[in-house]
Amino acid sequence: MKGKPRDKIWKMIEGGEKEKLLDHAAALHGHYCPGLALGVNASIAALKRFESEHTGMEDVLVIVETNNCFSDGVQYVTGCTFGNNSLVFRDLGKTAGTFVKRGEKGLRFVTRSDAREEWAGEFTEYGELFTKVVRERDGTEEDRVRMMEMAEDISKFVVGLEADKLFEIESVEVTLPEYAPIHDSHVCEGCGESVMSTRTIERDGKKFCLLCGGDKYFELDGHGMHLRGEKK
Ligand SMILES: [Zn+2]
Ligand SMILES: [Zn+2]
Image 1: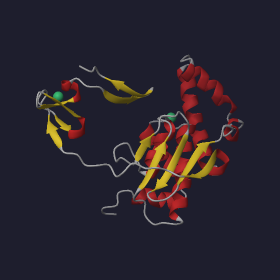
Image 2: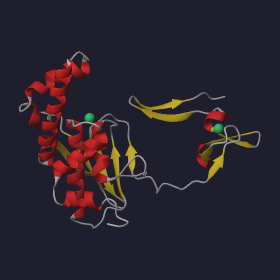
Image 3: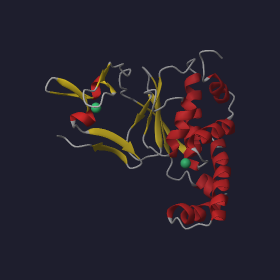
Image 4: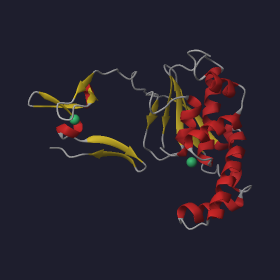
C-alpha cells in the first residue's frame, strides 16, 4: 500500500503467520537460529498486545538488552531499527527486550532461564553439533550443513511456541529518550566530509569531525560499545 511499506508485515503479524515472519527475518539475519526465533516470537506477542488497545504502530520503541541474533528478529518484526532511532541498545547481555508505546508502560520480555528445555529435548543432536562447529571450529562441511538445517527446524519450532512458555513477561515503567532530534550538517574543515553538528569539535574557531579534530567517539561491535580514538 502506498506510503505504508510495512503493511504486508503488519498483516502477517495480525494473521499470526509466524513462520513466514521468521523466514523474512532470517533473510535479514543471514541464518536461522533459536535466538532469532525468540526475537520474532517476542515481537509478535508484544505487538499483538498493543494492537488490542491501539491501532497502527507509530511511536513504538524497543529497548533490546543484547546485540545478538534476538535483536535482528526484533528489528524485522517491529520495524524498530538501528536506522530509525526506535531501537535502544542497553548493553546488558540478556536475551530480553522491552516493547513500549510512547506514553504508556512497557512490556519486558526476558527469556526464561529454562526456555531451552522447550526445544532441546526435541533436537538433542544440535547442542553437540553447535559445540563442534561453532565453539571449537572443528566440524566438517557436512556437520555445518546438518547444523544449519537443524537450526532452521528448531527456529520454526520455537517461533510456533506460546510466548509465555519462553519468556517472563512483565509490565514495566520506562523512561524513553525524546524524539530523535534532526541536526544540521557541517562540512569538516579537515576532510571536507559532511558531519552531524553534534559530532563536531571546534579547534581555533574551526569546526572539525571527531577524527580530524582528534576526539574520542563511540563504536559498537560484537564485543559491545567502546570509546575509540585518541583525545588530542
Ligand atoms: Zn543467529
Ligand atoms: Zn574531518
